[in-house]
Image (tube, rainbow, N blue to C red; front, top):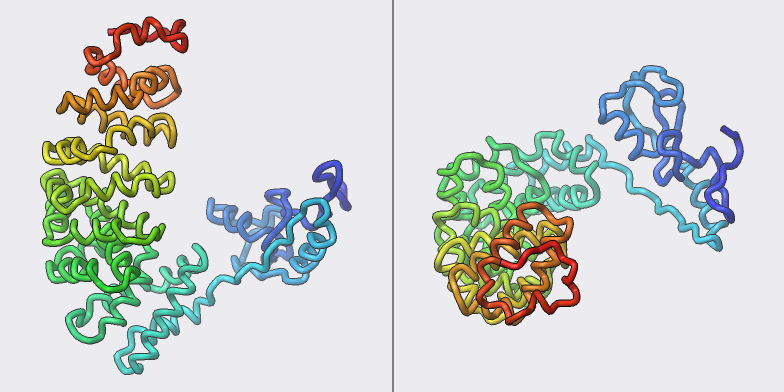
Length: 415
């Protein structure tokens, strides 16, 4: 391998020593290991995380896993990027360094110390929240210092008193972490703690409401016991609070993301889905469906399908004028998973209502379903489409398949 330059493309070459020896790509955050070799931080961290204990270049055992930022090399790379910007090279940003474990321990000690002034404790939690928000690495450093246990004790300590800001800040930090099952049980085993979280769903601050919803979703997902999950979903006001977040008048993506995650998790408890319908979940889902991003759209459609499996949910969706046209339009538009959920919801609706059948045909479902069964979608989606085609056969316009030029050579046999 040449020791000077390697071609990136016809116009520009990356200096060999600017490339990471592992990825062979331009380094954005060069760090030096104990052997003196320099790598891109993400590459060497992945190398170590997969169980390797030697230096990739020298094969010498790594006696110290500390990564030292190579600021000089990073500045040289940045200068090279600037000098070659005419070739479309963007300057690499100056990376934020991972949180210092000593600083993290100091902040946690201040936050949990009853002898510290109240304002100092709140400030420590806010600093921790900022660090956790910055990077996954920071969250790992924070979690490694027993942070979740400390934050849980603060969040649910004297939550009925005036120390509410301290509780809220603790919840804000906790909302960025995944809890272990024992930690989830700690929260769920006390009805007063669940009641407190439900109360926060109606707080004047949308951020407090969203953080509470995030905690509820984390706890429900993190517990395997169906009985405890059912207890949480039966809490008075929990569905109303979550639906209220989805109905927040401004488009706030984090609220939509957390709100639909929490609603879906709660709707997995079959015996309480009627509470979601009574709380207005149907209207919120249909009205917000176009505003969700891809992953949230899939989860929203999964929730729609779950609610369509109960009579009250099916009736509520059927009575909303936009339900059927939206579900038809979504087929093959977002993802295979979204298509499967939309087809399943349509199958439930059309099985329960002749009006839904006519609305689906009028919205063009026939063409969508014929495309679906010939696509590379999941087998479950295709089975749902075939069942729906059979169900709708009496509602098809006369000769619609036989006269269709688009499907003259189709291997789909009319029912």
